[in-house]
Image (cartoon, rainbow, N blue to C red):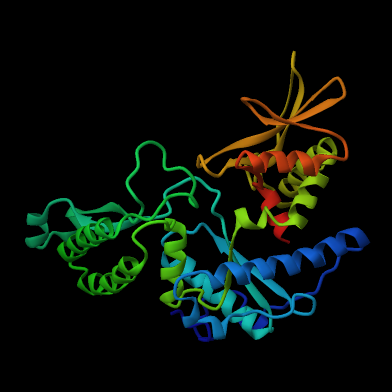
Length: 361
């Protein structure tokens, strides 16, 4: 692991010892009550999810948890992929900071992004004869392996890809071992064999690659003290549904405030690129009425697909949908019922862009 205590050559700026935890509470009473309830639900769900992971008992005594009514809550997170050292470092820093202030620590898995959670890069040789002759760098390239079950077409969402069979995992491990050995990475090949053995111990079927990655990572000591919870789970919490209903209820106002905040941020920081930190939301008008882009995904969990959400507005009526068309009517005061009807179809709203940070904060 990384040495975060070396003051002569600090990795962090400022040093971890100089980090502070400042309490914050909204002045709006209703929002404060929603926040308190959401913190309880988040920690309860994270404990339940983490307790269901393989090998959870190996580290459960050291989990960074507590009473959400009195303890700070520190969040980190990333896509549930095979981690590289930079991500391992981020999780180690989060653990140490949370432990130093007695905080609850939760890692949010962004499982609604598109991609193959089981895929990872491996150094390999283009020409083994060149390597044998001492020309390693001239012959070095990058290959990609995956723990995910073979499937045709697009990779889908990170949280939906299934872990391959034990036989597929064995063949994947053999191929990676050959690539590493050929390039002279024998130490890495030895370490990889240990990790591959953990993957082979997981069930033959019925487990996602995202869950497998999380379980193996934690068994290897990376983020093993953190609680875990997928973003898709968070977006199903009652408090989050209420939060999203508030956005939908005042969607036009929210649209303007979101863009204004982005434009102000760019101006304040001298950013000329209109795509940073996130692009402005769009508005369109036509024979079908007006529609507003929202910083939300409409996620089809069974189908492994997602689409940008638009609010359609015409003649006093409002619908929620995508660029392809409407999905459900939004009746004033009944936004929660509309979201429930989406869940019946295996769909849910998930924040994107700046709304992810706003929601979690």
